[in-house]
Length: 449
Image 1 (cartoon, rainbow, N blue to C red):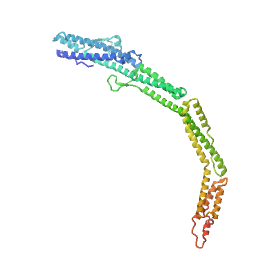
Image 2: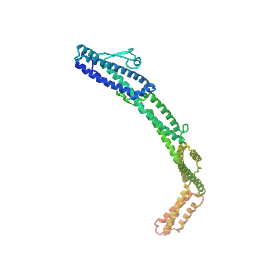
Image 3: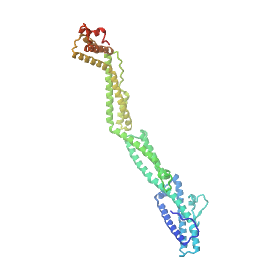
Image 4: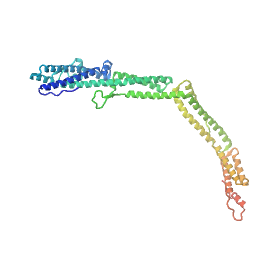
């Protein structure tokens, strides 16, 4: 919609003709805009809706503004028709005609009477105590522009919210129903599983959200900062987005429960096998401890605990959940059990290692003793009486029960040192027999540990 020029002195015929042409074009543009507003889908929806809150208040004012708009337009049309009639009286308008036309086209010659309802609610006449106003045609066009912009902004905003949110809420509600059916099939129900409670809360929130969006769409409209164009802004989807994310979280939880349902038997079998291996390892550790206590003297052997009854009870409970298709309870229990079962197997292996450590030490000493005996034999000293005596002493200690590992280790060391002396003899002194050099270590005490 355009705006006419400012008032001025008496217009001549050319100025009058140009003004009438401009006013005629404005009249056509205004009429087109008003008809478009009248036929706007958002306006028709607003007329038929049961509104509340902000939308109800603003629509009451907008309806009054639209009523005034038509009243202004009718007055504008009448004034334009009168001006055209005066101009058409004569081909060459007289001075009196031009004065009348100037007053009509530039002066405050248009009187607009508003209805009681319109003047009570419209932002123009409300509170003024007047049932009519006088305008120039230029001021009237400006006033119509203001009312049109505010009315269109309200209609476009409401229509934008209605076009965006209800459909998206309905789609999310449909997805919610599918998720609820799937959740129910795997035992995720309100009061029994947190995700079941979440589904109930999301359902209530979406139902309430849709009702509020339908009755008060402007409560969900965020105007664009600094925008003066009608409908500048966007729908506020904060609540919708939050519930959509919550539903996605529930869906992932249900997917996890479904995964448990699909491979529950395989996971239970693996759990049974892991716990069985842990029990066998602990049994082996207990048996080994008895052997160590019988065969090794003066050694601290750690105690071996029995199998975990708590884990066996939890495994039995997991099997019970599977039999009764309580997948939502089985899911977290299996995850916890799998971690605990691996820890139990590791504990059993560490216990076996700790218990059998003295046997491993004895085995290492036996191996070392035999390795040195073989080395001595390769160098031709297998029958050396001194080495045979040291070897037999160490062997008796290592192959006797109970075996004192500290004493046996000392005996093995003495044999090692004696063997080292034999394999690397010192140079004899002048006049000393060579075999004497082999024995001097014993006399001097070399090789004793």
